[in-house]
Image 1 (cartoon, helix red, strand yellow):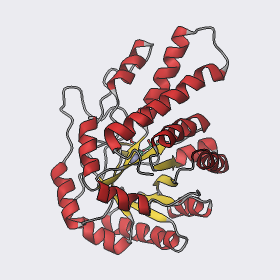
Image 2: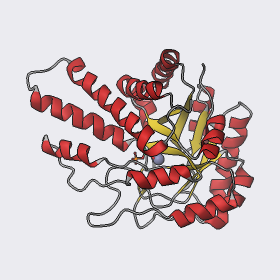
Image 3: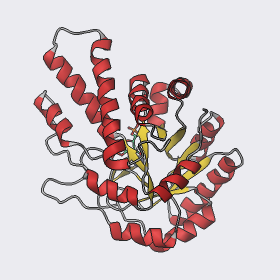
Image 4: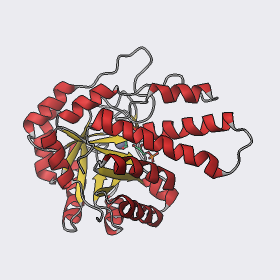
Length: 311
Ligand code: G3H
Ligand code: 13P
Ligand code: ZN
């Protein structure tokens, strides 16, 4: 099995009313934890790399780790650039072996977003690589883009057909109320997603794969553990798992998850040091941290994505 694109994964996910998990990777333990869970549950998988992750870990190291994971699990794995913000970054990832890139032009004007996305699509498609575009703005912090809640705007269903046909993108990230990070709603606010907008988009683009960013649930038990062991994240709130499951049954074929992995790993390491203050061998705390990543991914595959046994 080699690195694959998400094309076939999305076709099957759309028809089968489930979604593929796109998990952010930064190092060996994260890649091993994710791929162990997906391997055990035979779940198709997207490993995504932000430009910050690429700077942190180095493109070459990450590719070798992904190759090793594919050899180990025999799974189809798509390697995706998360939030590419320039043509040059997308080109570098395509030239370096990624099978999928996101060009995030959502912070540009509509016409500039179309032009930039179209340019990336032309380069990518000539090389067998698929492209995710974004229309609408999420609140929160992305690699190079900081969008305040006031600036966030839902995707306008009236624009999606024009955007997809003029750019040629293979999937579309939309804004329906999700946001990046661990603080998605203010305390006291009732988490909600605009399923009416998702339905309207689905009606205008039948069969077309939709992507949800900012889709961590910020699982309360991990926030509680972090707070119990000296952390300070009292107001962390995410998207309830049942809402994400509902989106996965609709046109959403890719669900992006990073914060829940960060929380699982951090909770495990905090707990470890609280219980074993004398430990200083990194393997002593990274092994349970890797297991925490594995368990979180297994939980997502079953509770949110519904993609077990679909590889
Ligand atoms: O949406 C952004 C992802 O969570 C990646 O985060 O840019 O800190 O690597 P990062
Ligand atoms: P979360 O911060 O909700 O995990 O979202 C991650 C994401 O959208 C990566 O692109
Ligand atoms: Zn994102």
